[in-house]
Image (tube, rainbow, N blue to C red):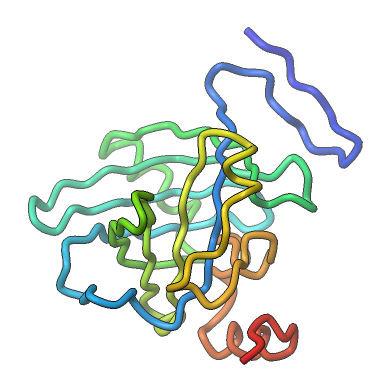
Length: 193
């Protein structure tokens, strides 16, 4: 069993076989990529974040089969300047466990439909947000190595790379509406049109 380390940012970084490094890039999109529709196969995701923590409860539903998966997740960036590399730990829950934890995570909700999308041989997840964030569309793609992550160009269907913008993290988005996000985009001049 590993020993937890305290970094200079006072963040506990687990030295554990249960936590893994996740390398991702995140992009802002105007809408679903060309050729995709809202009726295409997708997953329905509901994330509930515990206020002030790095914890979330994720419920994933496959609409075609009505199969549910529930995960209790801790996700954080050991280096707050590099949000592309995070440490993630997932615990899969049964129905009783999910029911017991649900009251703790009953606020700070994000709902979205996640669509698989392939472009130039690379798999992306396209998230179309619902509810208060309706209108927001983000794409994510994962990488096996730091080199691949660092050298990947912004795809042509994306408006801008927002990987290192804390505004676009789930823990922050759950506190906002789409109007808030649009105002922040304008204020930060993220889009140069």
